[in-house]
Length: 191
Image (cartoon, rainbow, N blue to C red; front, side):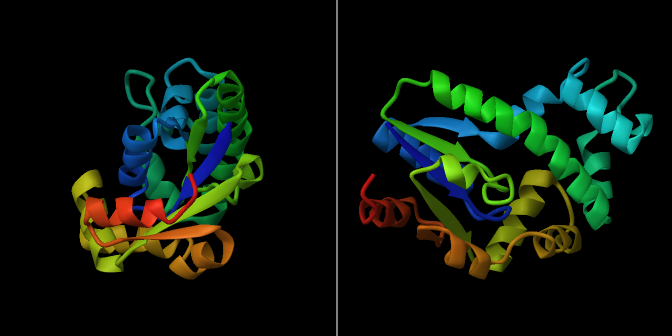
């Protein structure tokens, strides 16, 4: 079994890279963001912990997490973002490790934007970071999250730089928006 970490900043193309690894290499994807969404549903311990830290105004009338409101808080306040990250690492990292232990496929991919910060890189055989042009990332974030360019830029400014990923990852994929090019770069990595 081989465990591959996939990371990068918002809009760089982590999901696209994971889709290729799933389809071309028969990898099982363990997606940190999806797990965080599952674990923060109404009635969960993770959501309860978020409410304890951020107040009851962070949930909507149905008792579900208001993600937009939470995002607006954590992208304005470094301390609040760190607080959320600590909670996330407690619940999500534990769940990721449990899922990895249950998977029987030969290749497991851990898709996590905070792979290094959560120390999940330590469970990986190697880490692939994907990077893209900043203006392309801003466009993707705007489209995906339905936000304005300045908001997207603010989010990127609070995330790791390409240089961080180049220094820390074992392999770098340059996403120029061409799937075939990403596949070609992946072939150079012994997966």
